[in-house]
Image (cartoon, rainbow, N blue to C red):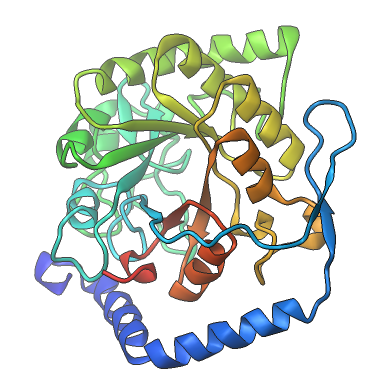
Length: 337
């Protein structure tokens, strides 16, 4: 990455790669110990989330079969290694000679400008903050209130890369690599985040989304990638389901039941839960998600489970042991090459 002019990412890439290579034996021993420890907990049964108004049937507590051929999804183009949501990140995530494994899908975020153009950017504001307190760009302004020229001139993480339009970024991704497009807020404070809606409330939210998604679908239709649309917002997925045959995946937040209901409503191909929702892992948050066994529920419905955001090989191994299908990861090194 230093050769690409990105020294700010090089140290993290090198450390992750060396750590993985030098600790393979300790890794096997550690995972074996973790498995024994998990078995000592003595859990015997769980209940599936209620999705049909009835009582969920208890199931025996044994992990689903481990996943041996996972899908690797480059979160914002492997944001831990590259300047997120840029053309450089897309190229780096899909090259065969990178520091880790080539991505099967590249995950990106889309949002409109004041001129109605679709750009690839995560935050509402151009000066949004990332996890390390670093400004994403040195330009300020809410994206949907800022003209396209200003938005697309903003430099991302002092990398020399600027905020791209959706079509430009798609051109940087080989057609054999899939694209997971996360639909961000198109410019409204009234949108309902992570909730299942119905009736007039859902119709009103869909009206807000429809012009933006029309533009996104039009752009995507001129490219040959496999597309998966995801969003925290039910109405966004509802409009996609009306206007496109592309796959959809709700991103789950606080309510497992709402996420499952949304997936059922729009014939989803996948669900995207956070790491803390995955039972049979050290990361499962029992206090928030109780007796949920989301992987079992997804298998019953035929959905893939793509988990966000995976930061290390240890997380990846434990999640794959629990039966998840895909890893939405910040680093290409979470899986071996």
